[in-house]
Length: 292
Figure 1 (cartoon, one colour):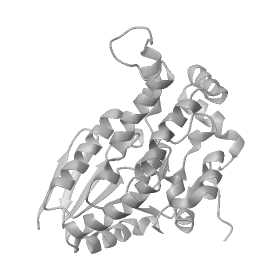
Figure 2 (tube, helix red, strand yellow):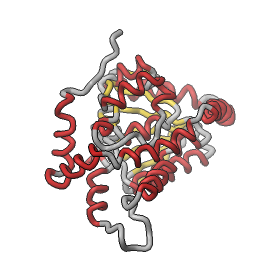
Figure 3 (spheres, one colour):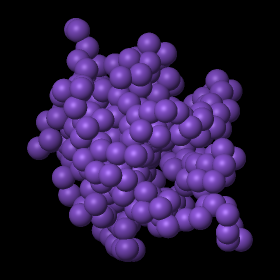
Figure 4 (tube, one colour):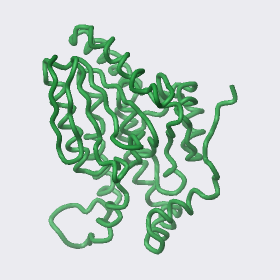
């Protein structure tokens, strides 16, 4: 059996049975998405897409969470150290256009599962929130643990999803229900509304994902690519690429709101975790359940 593994600082790549496993591997930070992690993530996906020994790719997260979002603690520390008036390069926070530019650069990395030829399955457990959903929804299929938590709580005060695949998975009403409130949905309920393709008890999630991956791995990779790409072309024709570009600009617009300024002030005085706790307190458990 052909099997090998390569590890970088934040992402590992393992290949076995024609299946590549790309693992976000920074559990001490709950696999929060930094620029360095996303560069490694893109590199691992491109390598797996290039290797003839691979037919299918599984993306998962080490530790208790798939991905708890963007690495905002590091981001706020970087913003505090930046001066918009000096330096040869953009700070990413000086102007509306700087902000949109920065978000578009992140978007290029996150979009990698969508643009490569081989099918990508996201295996979601624990928290898959904010930037974690941006990453998962760019994968071709998502399978979640029943008790996974999926959503974008940051829409309550911090911005708007800069990669906007929500409407293409759940339609406009559920996209609004989740994003206007910032509420999360369990993996079990996410399957009911089409946000994920299936869910399973946490103890059976690996088996559920690998059963699908092995089925796909029996198919000619060129045929897999043919069928993936025509569906994605249909998404492009339905505006997915344009919506993603506009989503980055809408997130930049959202960063100019009163709510974001107040949240940033809380971060400065309380720290990020306490600010997020204060943001979420009025929403209680903050979980929405389909009525059926």
